[in-house]
Length: 355
Ligand code: ADP
Ligand code: MG
Image (cartoon, rainbow, N blue to C red):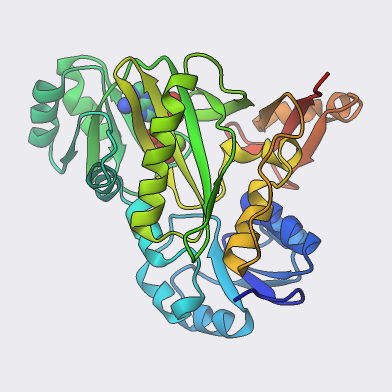
């Protein structure tokens, strides 16, 4: 069943992903209602309605659910249980959220889907970390099981005697210990899936990170990644199908000599897909709206020969006057306040034309 234009899409989370979803939804004639605990999250600049409440406020969620036709989320660090009041309106379902928000659940799930991840163990004490160091060797990265993003909640162990310091640095919280991977490149597979099982992929981007934060995504992904793409797509599809996922799902990979390794999944639109706004005939945001509203899939063909997206992080955003003056540069500013270091303030996409 498809939702007619004029219907309202509820979005849990009001950051830049919610903002770009709202813009895409508006283009298709939908209204958006943002649910977020902050005072003026940037998505509310472009959405029709806003509920300011805690993510676990069940009463507020119930009222929100009654005023919207479908609910989606742009942020996975929210408690799953309170979302039960949204019932069948939640797309993707709470299962996708539950799997993606706990790194230990996530890794076991990915392995159960037949895909490979870096050697890892769940750790809950210093002796677990020491055992992980002897079993996996160094370098090794500790990642908090929950609430990590943009490299936050991660501590590297570069030598055997650093285990205790690292365990303290991660504040002794349940974590996964993961072998450091000497990858050739990083890339992601972005898939959209419909309730009836239809699905669509985009060309896969190569992703470059600095200090755990995505800096650049570009398509085509290049020769180090090309041999891994078919296997990676099969893994992403298996993950989406096993979750019975509806909407966009992103799977991050490391390209290694022994094949693609899944790094993590995001049950939502993703920073590595921002290039699709101008670089693809249908953006990830529009496609997500299409999938959750039951509209047909849009074409994911490239609009040019290549596309490159650069994030504007912290003070990078001060370059906006020069960027808006650059012919062909597509500048996106998220309307956030202070340009704190590490904060994603905007992005710029350049599409290379076909000859
Ligand atoms: P986040 O949720 O913060 O995106 P990720 O697990 O994706 O966390 O880690 C962020 C980045 O850190 C990765 O994209 C990669 O560049 C680097 N990284 C993470 N895990 C490993 C690893 N096991 N080996 C090497 N690099 C890693
Ligand atoms: Mg990541």
